[in-house]
Image (cartoon, rainbow over all chains, first blue to last red; front, side, top):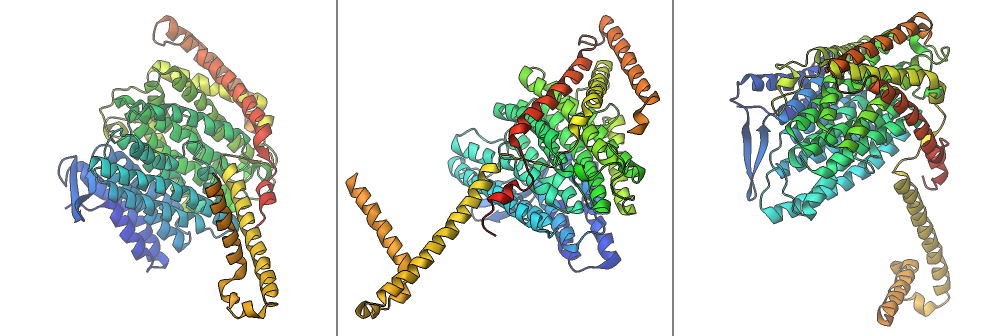
Length: 556
Length: 75
């Protein structure tokens, strides 16, 4: 009997509520370890050969299947569980509510990965949105509450598109199976729209760099892994080979990089690089060949490992200094060299240095795209930006750039340990992608050799000369005390005007109420009809509006 | 980055030279496809263009930190 690793996490989260002290911490780390061991046993064949389906229920007229375990789902499930272990070690001392929300978030992400029907998929999808919202809110600061509300609005809108699409899809096709979707017009595109909100495809990405940096130090690391990557999984499952995604992904990769140049907040810069990196995966899914899907999945795998490491490194700086802006940081190398080097392992990995994890995954996607010149060029150019910001701009601004502006120290031991786990994994995968390791669990057989001399030399030259260009122009990349406007500009401005207008209308109507009452009290006979109970002001406004409406209707 | 002065920068220049030699050798032995030094130029030029291009766009979309607060009329 196969046990659902996601349900283990959700059940574990509920148990976590009742515990405290040391036992709480032990259980907290044990939850993802349990999920991970279920997955390892699955790969070893204890539950039968892959692929298999299990946990079926009848619901209304449909059969729900909670678990479809196959070669596309397994790599995602693996990396979610592995990274959750490291994250929980890092977040050992966080608030209890954050821990519980994070584990429900983790569990529901696994639920999305294993769901075989659209009902189960949708339920876990929304649970994931809610749990991640509470992860953001658990910081408790005013800014995170506001950013959380905006985050919720984006995801509720996305969720509404998704459920509308699913409902139409089921009525049109009669099938609730979650697999490659038929291209049947509106339902297909509604579902796609719902999913790309979660994948943070511009212009629907603004929630990501808005909300992630407002979460707590420990909360933010959970956010980096699950939402966008489960969306990538959904695209790979349901929309593989759709050309639109290829172009969207390529633009997306570049978009994040351009915005990162302007950014002054450390974690916001890293958030724009999530957008950029997910762009590679979306492009890979859009190309849709076996090589490209392998590239997208392996890139999701390594990306989760190094992006969490980067957020942990920057988070450690925020933890000890309380500051996150480049303009308020600098010269910290003297105090936190260990954090710096652990961060740099993540930075080398995301920049795809040979012998680091990004090299064996990102280049596979880029290589798969070289039939499409524009896509290929955008992806290659984004590699430059990735190294420029994550590997050079951020560390230079935080750890060097000037004499120390603030005293600091290394973060607590558990944080270092969490980072060290991921650093070791990143180096290990980079050195040995191997056919039993990462390349062994990908959806298709891997026919790609990362360490050919041409590829190594090309990448090394690209990175080295990016460094030279940076070194010459580095003063241009100092942080500036500014914020960058993004596509959420319109909804935010429009939203505040809307709220303002509503407030004004209610004030006007209140005044009108009073005036009408004062006026009507002069006519005692009218007063006898108990005008007060109808709220005269509103009544008058509505009557006039209706009258004008009818007039217009008859005149046209 | 104080440790990037003098000796270490020289090491990086030497590394660039070595990479170029291997690249050129690889090209003439038909081990690599791209023209020698292509990726070096691509990396350098790409980086410069990226910085200037983004800074140009930044002129229009970077604002003071209290930008959104100025529109806040409620709450």
